[in-house]
Image (spheres, helix red, strand yellow):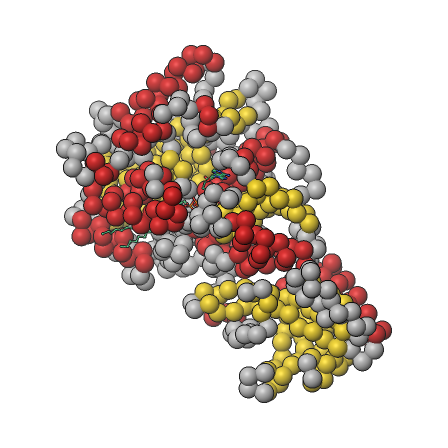
Length: 587
Ligand SMILES: CCCCCCCCCCCCC/C=C/[C@@H](O)[C@H](COP(=O)(O)O)NC(=O)CCCCCCCCCCCCCCC
Ligand SMILES: Nc1ncnc2c1ncn2[C@@H]1O[C@H](COP(=O)(O)OP(=O)(O)O)[C@@H](O)[C@H]1O
Ligand SMILES: [Ca+2]
């Protein structure tokens, strides 16, 4: 453990005043005059939050050459500001002037050495995917103006790919050589993150020789970190792992090399992997909202509000049988009001349980789960009924639309998910349930709502329920299976498993032309408002992707991937840096 040995201790000019500055093991402390109230204040920056040290009076924009006087140096570091309730990060910048050039060189050398010593896990080279198509279609501009200058300042090199089609990012990660990259970054929304998630998990299992199609397999956890620069419509994964969806905040978390493990839910249909999810696997309301919103993509983020209203007015509920494997109630519960924040105790305790020292690659829950093989009774619970919505979320799924999220006390890395069952109820009751997502009232404190912390869920239709919605899908499957005799993975991309167990994702072109439109027409709620026979079956929304199956099996894999984040910082925890107006650049 690094001692707190003093590396440099001298007086430095900050602005027009000269004060003492000390670089000890982990911190750089200096004193300066607070411009507003003309009094001295001490600033203390942990080395782990230093972004860069530059000789001279350096600026962030590379085109502004540093005025290289030989006695100055500039420090760039993480500054916490307050954008309303949100704890934003911005780039702090302070110029120091030394009595001599030697002392300046000593400061710069020691600071850079401290950076190298204390922050070995910082990314040096990143693979960046920009989605020009998602959100407000401003991803390129966001990246170029706010993020690229920070990466350049911090000395992080990047290879940027602006995607031209859906699934290009995922295919790139699955097939291309990733040597030398310390992480992959998506500039977009949850759909774009989902592409990188599928690429990173698929690549890791490919290289470990694990077949993703076996629902009880223990997946290999992925070391290649994923970073998100928010530029989408819901941006819920970014919001739930960082606390805000702000490009500069996220870029700074990436630069300092934060690492946040994240649970992932695998979704299977029989022995076929359909999708992975981290934010929401939702049937009923959320599924119908997504199905309806795809036609309104030209509206950007507003499409969810309009389709939300339309779907709400259709007042639909669906029959279903839900079986679930409860998690250990001693550890935590969805009603214990223990929000998952940076350094969360529940998640760190789960790390012990998920990866016991003896066998680091297998997760405890997967072992337990494989004991209860799919068909056995074990501790599986089963409920049947008519539901407004059935949602499974591995995290709080907080997002700008719903600051507390679908399940406010869910944990990012505890190996469990929260299953929320909203039974059929009157429209006002359901509106109350929805509305509580935007207030601090407990959305589970309603008679028709139940929530369970689970490790696995199976959803099936009650016997005799017509799944006409997917019959065409199955027809298509059988036609293609007949042709190729291999199980086709059904989703907007098809996986064809070859003899050698490697898996090639094929692009969505495999779908018959017009199949999607036919499906979507079926769900068109505008005509649905008046149509007599509402569909008996809804559709699954899996992180913003429609699933082509109704009967699915979901399993939570604890801490399967890692993000360049540190969880939601408890706003109260950073009083001292709160007011830093004027010292923030690039905001
Ligand atoms: C009356 C106010 C109702 C507010 C309801 C807020 C519920 C918010 C739930 C947020 C769920 C977040 C789960 C995130 C899923 C995302 O992965 C996924 C993809 O994200 P991407 O577009 O960035 O790729 N996003 C989604 O699937 C969108 C989720 C659906 C949002 C529902 C919005 C409904 C709001 C309108 C309801 C109005 C009812 C009253 C009308 C009289
Ligand atoms: N260049 C592209 N053209 C069309 N679709 C794309 C492109 N790049 C990515 N996509 C797809 O767009 C979808 C939405 O992307 P996302 O960034 O989540 O935006 P939003 O948050 O608005 O949904 C993703 O599912 C992704 O697969
Ligand atoms: Ca979880």
